[in-house]
Length: 214
Image (cartoon, rainbow, N blue to C red; front, side):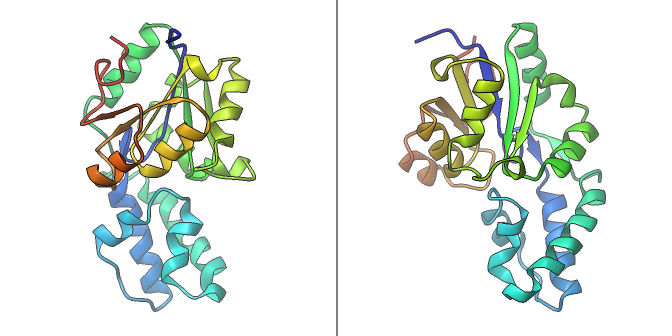
């Protein structure tokens, strides 16, 4: 195994718990358009494929454009609310990885504008050498394009890269990019679902040990 030079992180459910903001913006949108509220657990199961795909299953096609506008306007404020927080050990892990002189990047299906609001609000944007979101690509995760572009940008090979996510879509993306992938069980997918994807490793929480970077 080559020495790791680059660690790429998903955001939601991996580094950050922003589910409270997502739940609030989602149900605000539903109520504004006359749709029923949804339980937090139902909303969280739909997270991970971008905001358009989050809303699409719950509304009529002709309402999608308006729904996205309502959701995004609300979400800009919700992401800076008190319910948005770093997951345990995430901030200290980023600090320690930078001390080890590793390159760090973000690969998220969340749109760029909202990813940056979140990362800046939590004051962790400074840790990343490159931040790439699906709205800058033709194809989102689980296609490997997002990881491949980051590796090209930072001139790092797949065998020198580690990807860290929390969902089955992250495991699929890493496998397609031929990148070692660690899935943490702090997101919305159950352990049995993650195990079916057979990632390189599964971890209960973030740490140098759980990422194999001690």
